[in-house]
Length: 427
Ligand SMILES: *Cc1c(COP(=O)(O)O)cnc(C)c1O
Figure 1 (cartoon, rainbow, N blue to C red):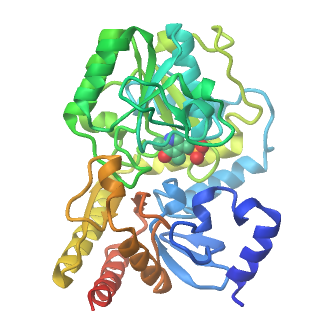
Figure 2: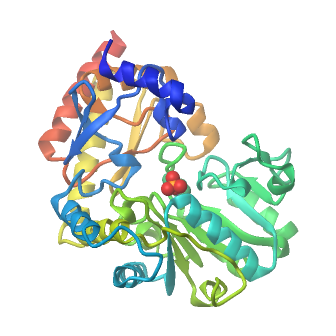
């Protein structure tokens, strides 16, 4: 038995499903998850000593490559001074100032320890600020696992949602309206009917949790316009896209200023850091200034903040995003050409250092169109690539991630393997 299998068997006895976050269990692709022992640059090594070129990057944070010396050094330097104090530190001030400088929509920001905490807190804040209860989210967007966000669509456009998870009271779900991504008409209809009840709209401005789905500019501009018109707080959930699609996230790419932004993943550089921030008049409603309670024993952990600061500084080095986009584009173009050569139904696209691959004629633009793709073909591709040492996300409904540590020759290696896999799929 391989060490991966042995660990997975032990894991399943002690941990539900053998994992601490569901997608890691390989349920949607089948097979044995790889237990990772170490990582460096664009590669990870599993418990059996097999190396992989990694396109998950810890689901985004490893944007400068795994175990980057500057990040590791910063963590070590912080750790020897003590792990946490439950009192403010200079590093948190630096981190907050840096985030506000890098994202012009942030007047103020508060640090938390995960993306889930960031979105949950942003929604509470929006509700406290507006005095309204209802929120809008979009089908297929994931915003962490807070109760009011684990909700699926109700029976009609104007009906509130139903829980999509056990343990979520219907009474919570009924405050969440779930609409279709990129559907401007649906959005307009809902705002016309109930605009004055809606505290917030939360959106992944480029969606990355139903695979990569691009927004139309019209959709994002409609969100801004309708939220402004109805006094609704617009929350861009940039936990995945922040400092991943470009130096100012999706808001920078489209020139749209959200009222609140949630961050995570990249800003922790691999350590647990999340953040939410935005308009000063809204942020001043948080305790201790205002009535909206929010707190965290380990919020702003000095070790985690050190990793985040070091990582964010790396993204500000000249040419960082040019390199990141160039490598990601090479991967997407290479995969598209290989699939075309072998007549495999396939499409792919990228935004900055994030990409989507789809076994469908065209890149999908909604939850309905992405779920219509050929998941059997994806699963074959996934396993063949994994066997050959190329680690893609273990689900057809996840985005992929490239880092600046991926070289042109690493990408070429993956593309060459994909060419062979596509040839075998067609045979
Ligand atoms: C990952 C993610 C979250 C949740 O972050 P966690 O750190 O896993 O709690 C929220 N929103 C988006 C868009 C994400 O990609």
